[in-house]
Length: 366
Image (cartoon, rainbow, N blue to C red; front, side):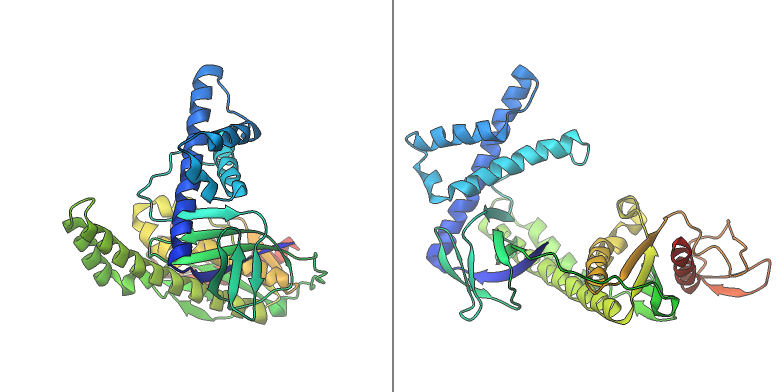
C-alpha cells in the first residue's frame, strides 16, 4: 500500500539556486524529448521508446555546452522523459489533449527524486540528492519506506515536497452495513452537504469571501506592463491569495470528511458527473469553489481506512424528485427548493428528500 505525505520545506539561498536549475533542466529535457517524438512522428509515424531517448540523453550530457545538465540527478531527468512518454499515452487513450511544451514563464515547477530521500522527524529536515538536508515543517510522522519524492515550487513562491511512502498492506475488517450507522449525503451549492439524518453543512463559499480582494488584485495585474518586474510582483501577490483560499478549502474538506468517517460506518452519495457540471457557465464558479472532487476522494479513503463502506449510486436516480410515497415529479425545476407531492400532498424539502432517497437507493444495493 502506498500513501502520500506533503510537507513544506525551506531551502536556503544556495539550495534554492540549485533547485531552480533543476527545475529548468527538467523542463528542458521534457521539451527536448517532446521535440524528438514530434520529429519521429513526422518521419516514421510513431513515438520513440523512453529508453531510447534516455540513451540519447546520456550522449547529450557529454556534448560541450550542456554541462549544466549535470547539476540535476540523472534519475530526475529520466523521470521527465517518462512523464513526456506518459503524456503521449494519455493522449492516445483520449484521456487528455496533445502534449504541450513546458513554458519558462510557468510559475509552478516540479522535479522528481526517485531514490535516496531521507527524513529526520526529530530534526525537522529532509535530505535529497545533491541538495543535502533541507529544513522542513513536519506535521506528522510515518513508519513506512520512502519510495520517491517530488519537490514543487508554487506560484506563491513556496516550496513543498511530496513523499510516496510504502506500507505493508493493512488488514482492515470490513464492517457490516447497518442502516442505523449509515448516512446519505446530498451535495450542492446552496448547502455544501445535507445528510439524511437532518444535519446540514453550509457552503463556506471561499472565493465569494475574497471576491473583492481578488478583483482588485486582478486589475492590478492587468494594469502592469507584460514582462515587467512590477507585473511579476503583482502576480505573486495574487498567487498568495489564491493559495490562501485553496488552503482554507482543503482544511474545510479534511475536517468534514474526518468527522463523517468517525461518526458513520456507511456513507452513500451520488456519482456526479463533475466535469460536465463545471462546464456549464452558470455552475462553473460555484461548483469549482466547492471542491467536490477532492471531497469524495478524501471521504472514500478515510471511510475505508476505518473499515467502513463507501457506496455511490447512479447519477440518473431521481433522488430529489421522488416523494416518500413513490411519486416522481418530472417537471420539477432546479429553483424549486420545496415542492408539494400531487399524490399524497406532503411538502418536501428538496435537499433533505434527496439525501434520504440516496440512502434508500444505497441500502437497496446490498
